Image (cartoon, rainbow, N blue to C red; front, side, top):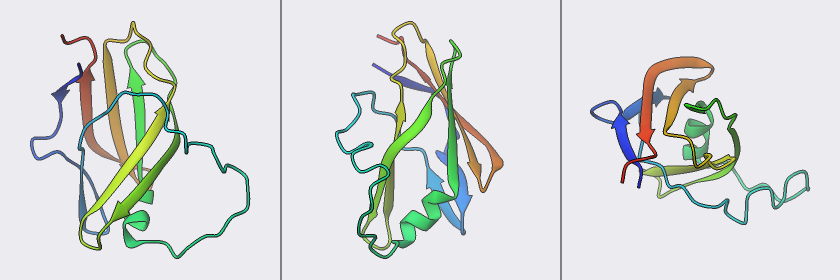
Length: 123
C-alpha cells in the first residue's frame, strides 16, 4: 500500500492559465496497453481540448530514494468542459527496494515549489 506522506494541504501543486491543478494520487500498476501503441505513426488529430492545453504546461519530475530515472511515457486528458482529469504514465515501475517516490512540479519550466511524497513501504 502507498501512503502520501507529504503534500500541500489543499493538494494544489500548480496553477496554469488561472486554473488550480490538484494532485489526486498515484496508482502503481503495469503500463496500460495504449502507451507507445501509436508512437511515431501518422494519425488523425482532432481539435485540442482546453484541458489538454492547461495540463501540457505542467511537467512532473519523479524521483525515488534509489536514484531511479523515471520518464513520462504516456497519458491522457479528458473532461466534461468544466472538470478535467489528466492521467500520466511514468516508467519504469519503482524497484521493490524503493521506499519513497517524490513528485516535483513545474509550469512552463518554472518550478512551482510544490511537491508530494509517497511512502512505498507502508503496510
